Length: 448
Image (cartoon, rainbow, N blue to C red; front, side, top):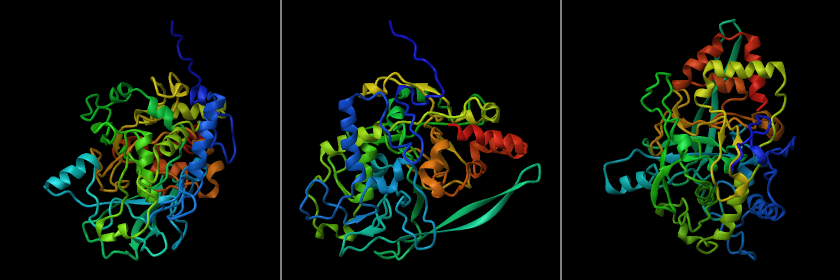
């Protein structure tokens, strides 16, 4: 007889939930891991945190960096396993933010193949993402330059909030002008917590929420991204990345090794260098540079970073904010809860979880659009980000805490006010809410 899974919103990751607080709240292993699996977690943690170096080197376990890259360690982007942030000032390094690149697809066999397996057509010279660092002797692709203009949003009660609209430039292009057809998408690194639990949600539990034609007339038209699985050599649903462009964590990690650090693996045998950049003239760490064992270790680590326990659930403001969250319609995309299915890791299987996401794509309006399609995601669509852990973001990230895909929002209220498209009706209800109700909504979000 199978016992029912107990619902406990205070433990958003089920039995995996950690009670750790403070700056390291996002860096703890799943609480239900056995001792030997905690050792595996520690091994993966070492490969996630420690830097890779250029080849040749005295160590062959971590060499082969570049020649073009964004960072030399995973932890440099996912700061304390949390979210990244855009450059803080002109000339600041964009370590925890990257810029995706592509060009419009033409009706050619090569471009159709790109769209099927990559979801985009890479720039013929600059590839699929801007790599702003390089090993000695190589030329970086350019430098990220973001500046902001401000605009004021007024609530019905007369109070105002200033929003920042980002404007992206690429300075000092290292391989010539990229041309007018270049499409860009600036993205900060997302937090790492609970990823294995999201991987363990049954596909059927996600697809049942698809409603691309809005048949229920609620204004929400979510649909799953359909992406390429390198191992299966087949199209499957996407779950990870800002546009759900990756099917699972192993492929997500392999893609990050290749794109962010110039490190190849069996699952991603090519880095982001193009023939125009002549990367073959620089030494590498052997092919593949990331062994299957290392990729397995990092994947295990990324699957088992625990979600911290919720706080202040009994606070009247939090309880009122939850009811407002539901009444506003936010749960139409930010689905509160699931029970995970069978996963290769028993620790992640059969858990009642509270991620507040449907992992589907939604049109978020023109203000948030990057106008860069990715597989079946349009240039206005984004995957619903999980909300669990929001209340710990300030503790983990400190003053650099930023929100939304490009880090434009400095506060949770700013993030809400950027919502458009399918979320426009909910946003307009927030504009009509009283100051007290807005405080209650933020109190609820900060309790997650």
